[in-house]
Each structure stands twice: as C-alpha cells, then as structure tokens.
Length: 213
Image 1 (cartoon, rainbow, N blue to C red):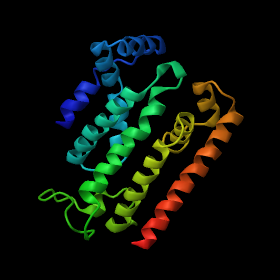
Image 2: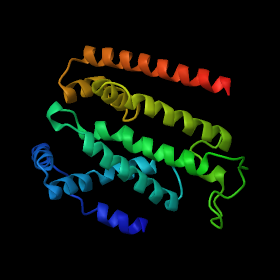
Image 3: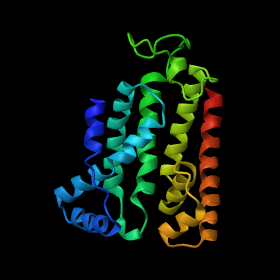
Image 4: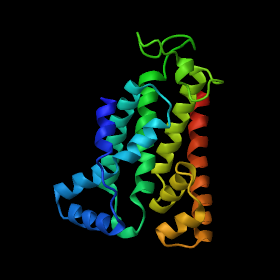
C-alpha cells in the first residue's frame, strides 16, 4: 500500500502561487473539485511529516491517514486572504494529529526495548525509536508533552500560531516568515515572544495539575 501511495504522490503536480490562490477562491465558493485538488496537492507535506517519525511502513500509513485528517481540518479553517502560506498553517495540525495518535495507540503501558512494536514484525521498539537513548516510557512522555504543546499553540491568536509553527515545526527563518505574512522581521520576533509566553503559561498550569494527581 505504501508503494502505491508513493506512486500516486509522484503524479502530483506542484501548484504555482497563482493557481493555488485561484483554487482557494473556488473552494471558498463551494467548488468541491477545487477543494479536493488542494488537499491532493498537499499530500506530500503529510507524507514528509509522517516519515520524520522514523517508523515501520505500516505505522507510516497509519500516520498518513491521521495526518490527512489534520490536513482536511486545516483546510476548513484556512483563510487564504491573510497572505499566509498554507503549509505553515497546516503543519502543526497535521503533526498534532499524528502525535495524538501515537500517544493514544502506543504511549501507554510498560514496554521492553526488546519487545516487538508490531506483533510478528521482528521490529523492536529500540529499532523504531527516533533516539535509541530514550526508553519507551520516556518517548511516550515526550509524545504526550508534544501533543500538549501543539494543543496550546492551537489556542493562540492566528499569527502567533503561524509564527511558532513555522519556527519550531518547520525550521523557517524569521525573515522568510515575515515575507510570508507581510510583516517586519521585528514583528515576527515580537509575535514569537508573545506566543512562547502564552504557551509557557498554559503548560505551567498543566504541570501544576499533573503534580496534584
């Protein structure tokens, strides 16, 4: 199935900025064909994000399914008139869906590094972990915290969401982000500081609640 998916990805034509804007306009007016074409054109972003988790192919396919749901959710909320790149807008929702899925499916329980991640696969948890220096429990904790960070980011004002997602998830340069959202680089830094301050506040409340458990 993964090879078939890759074959379909190879058929996807990259859209020009003008083509994409035209499709967003049509999609906003209820054109389902335009909407579906936009979703299809961003499948490579879902695939690239799924691969970053360094998991076996079966689980990559599961992440692609979850990421596609995140992509659909992002497309429903996206406002192309703000001049923000959709890839920046969509990435944190795609990745958040994937992390929540991994935390739900594989985050619980006590696992041995030598136990199989998938029954009968011969692939151990130590083989599939991004860093083999972490235990499954530590990885589950990281997945949980990452999911909470992404949830906190989603509660931020739109531009703070976009800036934090671009900087911390896409590794974009502030100067490139500024150009994408039509603001100065200094304004990007101010949005970053405000966003980080808000996220820290939300996470500090979460940690305080966890200590009470």
